[in-house]
Length: 159
Image (cartoon, rainbow, N blue to C red; front, top):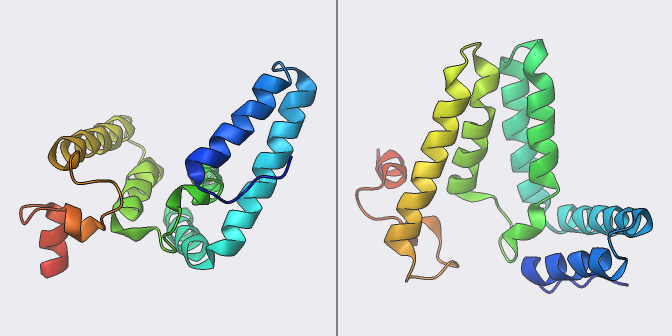
């Protein structure tokens, strides 16, 4: 099976069909991992700017974090770069994704136990807020088109 670049959803459906058709057996999982890895590599080649942005962001967190938390940062980086296909036609990760990735890596900067919960709660609240505000506007608008004047992202950019 050759995966097309017809979009993130279509590729996901094709990959899941590999598992389903293979009845979720080990051989199907091996094929799934192989095809997923190949797609991720193609997506990274198609989006060098986004790959560089993700790498730069995570390198900064790795440099600032304690040695014991660097595996968290590496895992976050790996998850982000293997999901570049979700950007579809976009070449950059944009402000919203940058903020989400930064929130995911905040726990690496401190030893306090409540920070991961706070980062997750703020990300969930932000996602719910945007889902309610912009559900009818479509998912392909840019961040600044979707954001209202009261958005903290727009306020930060205007200052």
